[in-house]
Image (cartoon, rainbow, N blue to C red; front, side):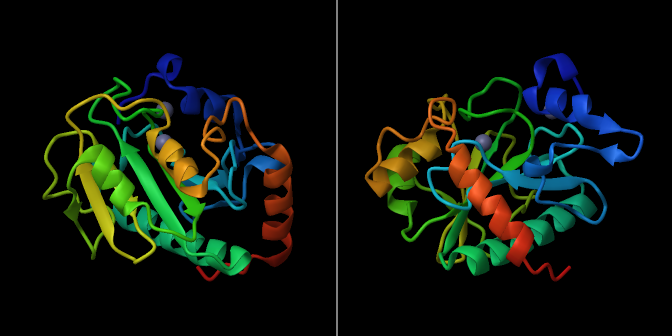
Length: 218
Ligand SMILES: [Zn+2]
Ligand SMILES: [Zn+2]
């Protein structure tokens, strides 16, 4: 595993908050940690929809493609369980996506440290993604099917239909591309930038509901 704390914002945050007992984040920043302690789910800044969450690895891994089979399976299970919880708390279908980087060059328009965005959304954005990124490869059975992937940066997209698509990238994406596409779809085209619109009230309200109502099965 490659670690360069000076160049990874996520690692900076995690390292600053690790202590001898594990990882200690401010209460509102952690919803749940996976059984092995390798993955964590937290509310995402820039919650333009209620329930927007991020799952990320506590160790520095570039993207899900770089996980070994055991960790990939654990991540798949953790993502599936969080989608189930998110659906039950919001009553909405959920999409998810990953900016999978081949290297540290921000080609994907997001941070180069494994993280999965989860987003309650009533509509599919598959057509919008195809228009922006070209045609994808479909992997319905396995979120993190690594063997058939080329060594390439990618966007992984889990649709409300339950199908999972990989878009392989041959050019640099603008910042927060998928969030921009979602906001266009929702008719709130200016809301995509988490730095400008963090929506902390929406986050606090979701965290409260999660603490009170989330039923975890694993
Ligand atoms: Zn990192
Ligand atoms: Zn991202």
